[in-house]
Length: 223
Image (cartoon, rainbow, N blue to C red; front, side, top):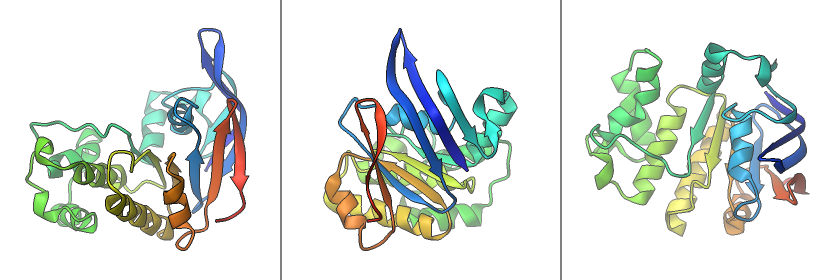
């Protein structure tokens, strides 16, 4: 699905990430760890062509990202759902309208019944008409997850999805991501929360990747 081969990224004469190689297989589950500033967000951006490697190659669904034109990159991003760390919304639109935004932008029709079902799955059916400023941190994160999956992507990338929520909500978000993986989705979660990774042990076979010294390391065997 996505493969990095000796991929590096840097700017201003210095490299943030160096010679990374990885294959994300269909249906796999990965945690990405590393200290703040290690490059976890940059790594995720390489996976969906938000950034292009300065050296090496990144291949997505059989295509080198360097050879993709704008329309092809847009097509790639419909296959990759991203839960951003800041999970920004349009405050003048309802939560349901924000969740449906990827379909609106792509000019695709919105099946209201499916939208309601998705919001029920993340536990937000009662808040579908609420404006984003009224949502709690946990509700915003679940809305961001719903927005990431509404287009039916094959891969889910989540950047510190539990960074601003309590432990109970962290477990709830983890459960949703595990359920997506059981549906066959490839999942990558960037996190510094080792307790969250340990909690996943009983629920999913995951690989733990660690960025250290600008390089990508396999931190352990299957959890």
